[in-house]
Image (cartoon, rainbow, N blue to C red; front, side, top):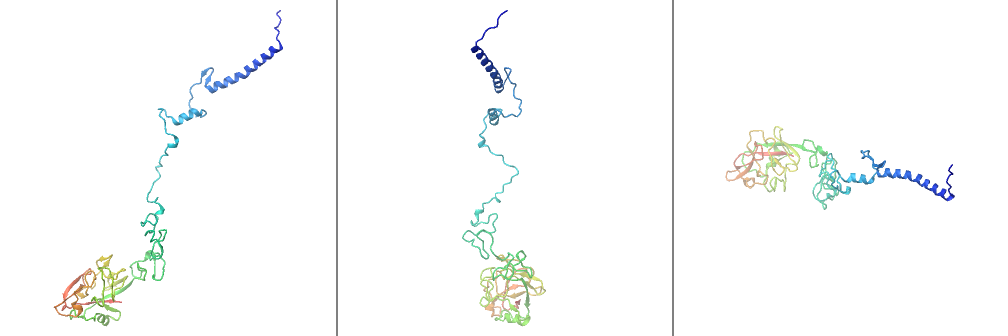
Length: 327
C-alpha cells in the first residue's frame, strides 16, 4: 500500500491561494467575454436592432453618419423645417416704432409726422391715434353743434359733415315780373322781398356789393353771399335742385362742376341775370354794373332749365329774370 504524499504547511497554503485565484478569475473572464462580444470563444451574432443605446460610440456614429458614409453637419448648424401652416404677413408684422414717420402704417389711425402728431382737435395724437374731431360721435368744443358719428351726412335733418348744425332746406323762386332788361339798379333784393317775403334775397353778383367766389369753384372771398353751406335747395315745384356741402355754391363738388339734381326752374323761363362765370367767379359782363337796359351792353345770365350751372351772354335789353333765395 502506497503511503500518501506528505505536504508541508507552507505547500498547503500556496495550494489554497491558487484555488482561490481560479475561483475569482472564472467569473471575470465570462464578464469580459460579454463585454467584448464573444460567446464560447466566438463573436456574438450581429445585433438585430433591439433599440439598445448602451454603446455610446455606436449611437454617436448612427446619429451623425448615414449609410452612404457622408458626414452630416453638426447639430448646431441644423435648420428646423418651416411650418407650412404658418402664414407670414409683412403688413401685420410692421414695426410699431414707425409712428411719427408721416405715413399711416398698419395699426395706426393717422400719422402727420413726429412734429405734427401733437394731439388736440382735428389732429393726430403722439401715439398715432386720432384726436377729438368731427365725426367721432361726441360734441367737442364750442365749434361743434352736433355729432352723430357715422350718421353725419347731407340728408335733411342730419348732422352735417362739418358738425356745425343740421342740414336744412330752403326754396329757390323765380322773379318773373321784371321785363326792362339789365338795369337792375341794385334793386334785386327789394324785388324778391316784395314778391316772396322778407326772407328772400336776389341771387345777383356785381363784384362790388355781392361776390360768390374769388377762386374758381372754391367759394372763397364771398361778400354778402346768400347761399348757405350744408343746405338743400328746392325749386318752385318742391323738387331738390342741389345740396351744398362746405362750399356754398350750386353744382360744385370737390372743386369742380357737377350736374344739378334737377333744374332751377321746372319750365318756361329761359334765363335769369346772375353776373357770374360758369365757375362762380365774377363776370366782367354785367350790363355796366346792372345799370343798362339797352343793346349796347351785355350781361351774363344763367340758363334756368339746364342741368348744370351754365351761363350765357345776353344783350341788356333782354327780359331776364331774378333767382330769389330763401334765407
